[in-house]
Length: 111
Length: 114
Image 1 (cartoon, rainbow over the protein chains, first blue to last red):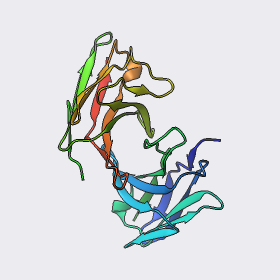
Image 2 (image 1 turned 90 degrees about the vertical axis):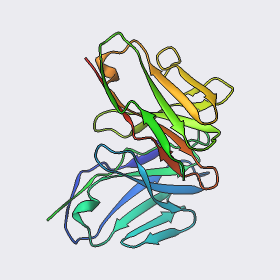
Image 3 (image 1 turned 120 degrees about the vertical axis):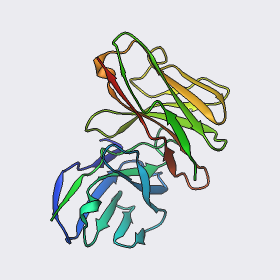
């Protein structure tokens, strides 16, 4: 099993819809969880951090399920500008204190 | 936050040659990281660069192919040696801020080997 697994999609999302996608992780020692956003031809940037059960920031909600070892990202009222790659990072990694990314999930929001 | 200046932003190189990528950080950091992102793929960690010691390479990456320098706490270089078309990729440097483990990235180097 990969340490971080994401369904890469792409997912076609109608504008205004709510979309959620999951990231599963295998290292039960991971304490912090991050969602990064990467726009086309740009570097990744931090979207949200999750240290306990969840976090909410505007239209974005991240939830952590430690028992099942997954984190989810929910986007409400999807905008065209939400089309990007969303990368999941559980931290630390089994190999130490380094940032290892999942494969990324690519929602494509269409009008 | 951390501001990272990475250069060159892009280059087209002949096979068999080498390219050195530079990253300058606006503050002192203990560890710097180098990633490769191939077309349509996620980021893959190449190595961790520590000041004063040899870099630590991930599985599948070796020092002869990707030598790294880390002369001080604000600067690092990655060299892609003896390039082949398979090395065409985006290379990114990154640092973590220990207080919250957020990763910050340079703007990336888009390398094309012909």
